[in-house]
Length: 191
Image (cartoon, rainbow, N blue to C red):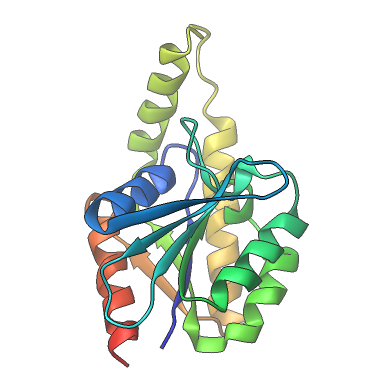
């Protein structure tokens, strides 16, 4: 059975790192380019028995995923296209906070669609955000309010998914998130 996982987390929680780790742990078969823009739109990895795994969005910059694409219509197009071909992994900072149109589209997959949440401590997230800023030459003091505020929004979404929408959720240990995701995909692939 195919499985689709949307990863949620605030800035610095490790969403992009998890995507890149999935590409490393599995065998990256190919980078799929958008025919119009010639930019990456998905990555196909293989290690499973029945279905390939598609990681959506470009990962050519420090932060990757669906936030790198122009609009939610692109997100929906990719989800529907690759959701028909195999397993799917997708993430994005903006999409971590709300259900929206892509949440509505995900309903067609029922229990096959899982909302995963990273348990990264806020102190770790803030340290990573600060390190990224410094690497870019930005020495201004970090105002943690935006990152902390995102955590509250993400927690509200998790509550809504579980208690109001009855959607399937999991919490991933940030130190082992890629391996836990691979285990989930393997389980669904064997069904």
